[in-house]
Amino acid sequence: MRARRDELALTGRSGGQHADASQHRIRLDLTEEFSYGMGVELQKDWIVQTKEFVGSYVTAGYLPAKKLTIAIAVTVLPEAFDAEGNPPPNVVRYIFRNLAVALGGADTLPPLPSG
Image (cartoon, rainbow, N blue to C red; front, top):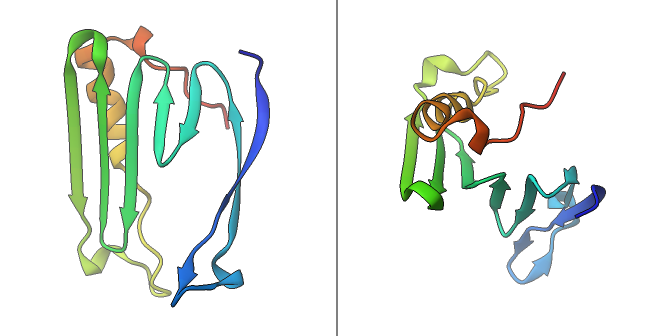
């Protein structure tokens, strides 16, 4: 598969009407080792999904070759938000990656992006 840059339009709807203010564009490099569809990331050998809601972060992944599943959920306390109400960084991706490497092997995940 040739690497390419795709653009996904995520559109929210409210009361059956298109909500222009809720349309966001995300740029991703889609490759054989990382692709995205319907909220699921294919990270080399892993099938992963991450959800972020105000006050909670969840990441779950499945490694078919080893029949291994890892799921992590974190609830954020109100004190963790800054004065403007911004949430803290999502740490579950890093926790997931560390567990996935320890249990599934480093060669089952793509390298971390630089920067």
